[in-house]
Amino acid sequence: MEPLQQRIQTIEEKISQACERAGRNRDDVTIIAVTKQVSEERARDVLDAGMLHLGENRPEGLLAKQHAIPQGAVWHFIGNVQSRKVKDIIERIDYLHSLDRMSIAKEIQKRAVEPVDCFVQVNVSGEDSKSGMTPEETEEFVSALRDYDKIRVIGLMTMAPLTEDQEVIRDVFKRLRILRDQLAAKKMQHAPVTKLSMGMSNDYSIAIEEGATHVRIGTALVGSESEGDG
Image 1 (cartoon, rainbow, N blue to C red):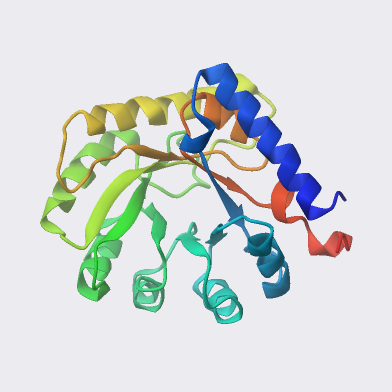
Image 2 (image 1 turned 90 degrees about the horizontal axis):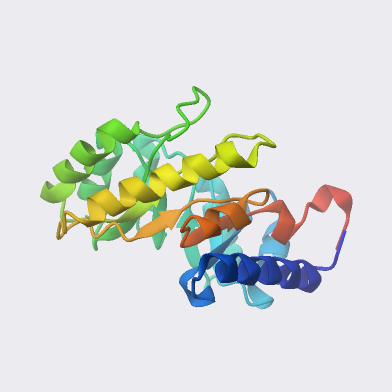
């Protein structure tokens, strides 16, 4: 596998090309290096290589990485979180990408000291295997969060189906962008909804073309330690 810096360079080139095709500014896209399947040492290497935004999907993984990397990183929690685990992470993260039910919102409200920047997770594709609320439920849910002053809804998050059909993937991302635009137009003080967290290792170029502001890139960036790529 390519060395880390080479992987980062390849991803940067693809992102710049996607931004160019979409007429977007490269600075409008944040790369989240998903370090959930690699060691603390590899996560440190990624940070040292200039990737400041790190993504974890389990409380245990987040806490272990933070113990090894006490400063310098911006932490994104990108996985489903159980209500009883909210207290373990909410003061330790900068962004939550998986707010998808009121029980989580209530726990955040109870546990957070400062407002937390959250993405509401939407299951645009409707697959049973995916978490998130339906697009139809999202507006009512976001509106109801006005009573929760520890939550700031900065955007929406989704995952596209695992398919080779790029038009299916593009349609999912496009639908999330349209939903985001509809919510942003309501100008809710607690929910600016300007961001889009969508796109992973296999589809981030399409996501950027459709408006992604945050892409979550795992293996293509951090590598796979089982392959021994040092």
